[in-house]
Length: 292
Ligand code: DCM
Ligand code: DCM
Ligand code: DCM
Ligand code: ZN
Image 1 (cartoon, rainbow, N blue to C red):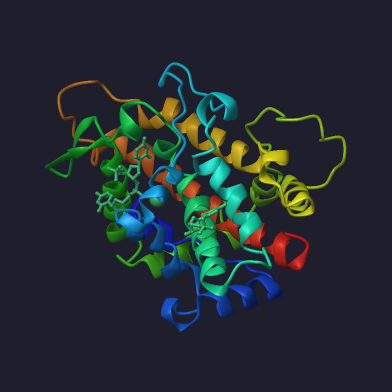
Image 2: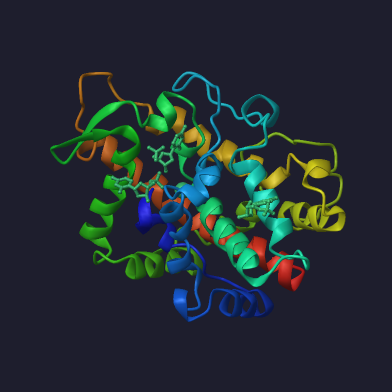
C-alpha cells in the first residue's frame, strides 16, 4: 500500500539483527529498514527486475466477501508469489556464497514482502488484487487497490502528523504500551486465525522460530514450504477481504475514503501494519539473534 505503509515497519530489532541491518543497508538507506522498504516497489518496473513483479502478492483463488481462503498449492503452485519469496530471501539473506549486493537485495525484499503480505489486496486474486475495480477516493476516480493506499494517506495526514515517521512512532507506542500490547504474543505464534499447515506443532516453540530454523537448517526452500508463518500471515490478511475490503455495495465508482467503509478500514490498516512490522523484526531476530 504504497511508500507510507512500508516505511512504518522495521522496529524492535535485537542487537545482532540491528547490526546486520545497519551494516547491510548503509548510509544510502539511513541504516534502517524504513527507507529500504520502498526499494522493491521502485525497481519492479525496471526491465532488470521485471521478474520480481509477481513476488509482491499471492493471488488467492477464493470468493470474497462470501468465502476467503489461501492455499499454497492452489494459489502459489509455480512458487512465484509472496509466500515463496519470503522463504527464498530468508535463505539468501544468510547465504555465504552471495555477494554484498545480493545480500542487501535479499534484506530489502524481506523488508518489503513481510509488509506486502499484510495487505489484504496483496492476498487476493479477484480483479488483480482490486486493481480492476473502479472506486473513488476523496472525489478522485481510482481503483479499489489504490483506495487502500489513499485511505492510509488520508488517515496519516489527519491523525499522525502526515509523516511516515510519526505514524510509525504511533504504531510502536500502541505495540509497547497501547491497545496492541496484549496481542504481540499471538502475533509471534502465527496461529491466531489459521489452521495448522503441518503436523509439527506438538512443541511449544513459537512458529516464527520453528519456521526460520527449519528453513536455515535445510537451506532448501522446496523442502520446507509451505512455511507456517507466511501462510498464516496471508490467511489473516485475506480474511479481511471478506470482513471489510470487499464489503461495500457494488454501485458504480463508490466513494470509499469517507463514511463507514473508511471508518471500518482504518483500524484494520493500523493493525496489519503494526503486526507485520513487529513480525518482520521477530523474523530477523530469529535469523540473527536466535530468538524473536
Ligand atoms: N501507488 C501509488 N498511488 C496509489 C497506490 C499505489 O502511487 N494510490 C503505488 C505506490 C507503490 C505501488 O503503487 O509503490 C504499489 O502499491 P501497493 O504496495 O499499495 O500495492
Ligand atoms: N535470484 C533470486 N532468487 C534466487 C535466485 C536468483 O532472487 N533464488 C535473483 C538474483 C538476481 C537474479 O535473480 O538478481 C539473477 O540471479 P542469478 O544470476 O543467480 O541467476
Ligand atoms: N497487485 C496485487 N495483485 C495482483 C496484481 C497486482 O496485489 N494480482 C499489486 C501489485 C502492486 C499493485 O497491485 O502493488 C499495482 O499493480 P500493478 O503495478 O501490476 O498495476
Ligand atoms: Zn510491493
